[in-house]
Amino acid sequence: MIVADRKPLAEILKNIEPYKKVLILGCGECVTVCMTGGDKEARETALALSIARKKANNPVEVKSHTVERQCEPEYLESARHLVEEADVVVSLACGVGIQNMNQYYADKRTLPGVNTTFMGMPVEQGVWTENCLGCGNCVLDETMGICPIARCSKSMLNGPCGGSQNGKCEVSKDTECAWHLIVERMMKFNKLEALQEVKEPKDWSTSHHGGPRKMIREDVRL
Image 1 (tube, rainbow, N blue to C red):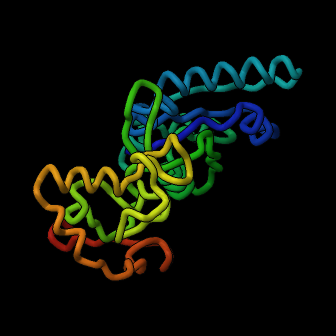
Image 2 (cartoon, helix red, strand yellow):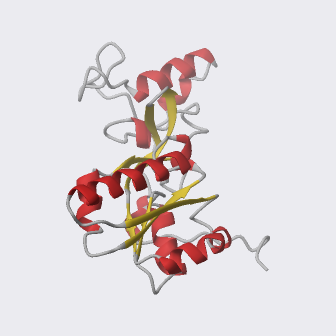
């Protein structure tokens, strides 16, 4: 899932300062799961902005609404009447949803209400950890389902390095050494000999370094 964090209320207030009608648009997918931008958070943000502007003697009309997904255009149409009524939209979706809103409703500004952080998973209530960088060339089959690109501080394909101690990364005693975890999994499945194979440097052309990426599936295109 994509993990995001709320922007400070003061930052959102500054961005909407010139506007009198504001729509807070939540998203029913990833940001709902990480309790950042779902319907509850959209209503809370709308109320907080309304109270803050009233205290500043600059009242604003704030409405909230949530669509199932902001990253897909077909779900955005249900909010059209609210978007058209508003002077500006504050999206609580990830960066993909925010960009999609600006493209779909090109005559209306959509501002970010969250900071998109990473792709990860929940480890406990209120805690998420990064697990994937979307590098475009997955090696999880070689590393026993543990990503060395996202979870190793050095993104090493040939590990572990000499800096890990007692299963922890040298950058922090609170950071697990990804390669320590990989080795443990290899031992469990009798695959430790795989460490003897030296991996070539990663081809980063499949990652973001070549500019925005596009995936085309001819089998599902219309």
